[in-house]
View 1 (tube, helix red, strand yellow):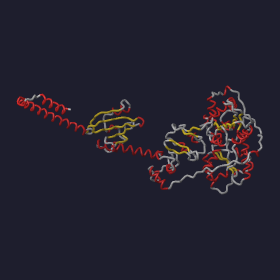
View 2 (cartoon, rainbow, N blue to C red; view 1 turned 120 degrees about the vertical axis):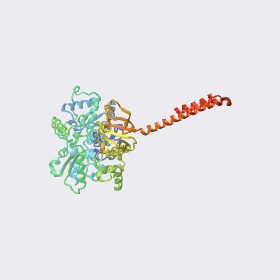
View 3 (cartoon, rainbow, N blue to C red; view 1 turned 30 degrees about the vertical axis):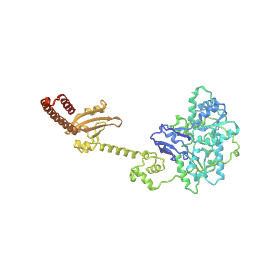
Length: 563
């Protein structure tokens, strides 16, 4: 599976993730969604917006627990967003928990943020092109998958997580690394760079809950490296520009910091259309307001306002003593990161194919294309293209399905030979069919929106069904010089009551005629029998036969007629 797995049993008749996916990497077929991981940028939006919790993020927690159980040396690298979710006194307790589970050392990813920032600045000095930051793996995937013409603007610098992992491996060759942060895409970046485990803060909380961890029963511990205030601000928008010193050398017009994919994608469209721009340094973070608003933050913060999260973050990191960071040998981290063009051009349908698909969804004119977005696509046209590409189904269009259902209902109603009346909860007539109008000798406008009393004096059967005193009412009654079978039942979920009137007048006439024929036949048979008995009696002696057999045969005939 990919980093995100679809739980089939939970994914039902919902297009919310399709609507919110910024790069249209989600398709729909067989009544469930499917993620195209060749296009997915792992921003995690689909996981967070799914109302049915049908997206399951891949976890390496079981493998990590097994490694710790076997006594393997594991070193944790914790993202600086850590301080955005936990109070100062609780962060030390969580470090105690990690060490109690067998973690050998607990270090801060942020100690390599400074190196990452400096290497960005170093690259800016030697290139004539604008430099796009590459600390955020979502931004790298976005450009590799959808803006390949801008790949040459990506800074060839490893992210702080990868730089830190390399340093750990160098210092502790026999160790394994677990990165803990709020980013879904880091799980993929960890796999690509040989980092054994990547956990989210949400998974960290689950781990603590599984072990019945209590903050009140542990002594706080601290990181095995010095806390540095300056680099701990790296998860905030604009921090890279500050850390690398670009804000002191470049003018405001030469650098820009962007966060949130909608804004970033707009800027990338602008950037690709320019042969010359004034920007020299461009910081991009996929999550609005920075990494502290990552998709896999603790579950208790999923709906939190990110301005409140930032306020808490700034408060917590200011609790620590500020120290100058000792920068390692900057030359040991070469500018050799490579990027790949993963762009796949989609086949664009012809205009006639698009129009034909729109017509098949009963969208014949521009006015029919209401672009409601209920299907998850921005416009009916986009939806039609997705249908042609096999990424969507016509039945995802709610107006189309509504029209089909109404048309089907009308066909059923009008093709019914019996009279049909539809009532609301107030016994007001909301619909009738032609058979009813003919039976009642009325016009539709004489009945619609009128109380059922316009047709029937006795309202008690309707009221009893409506109040559920009787689930179904059946009776034979006279109606407009006809004999009808009246059937009344209520559909509570729809808030309607339905009345069927079955005309049995003709059937009654036929029954009476049949009874008359039977009686006439019976009378004639009886007369024949009487006559035959007399004749038989008179000639019995001459024929030498008994009358018993003849009487039996004629008796059977009469019984047959009576039946």
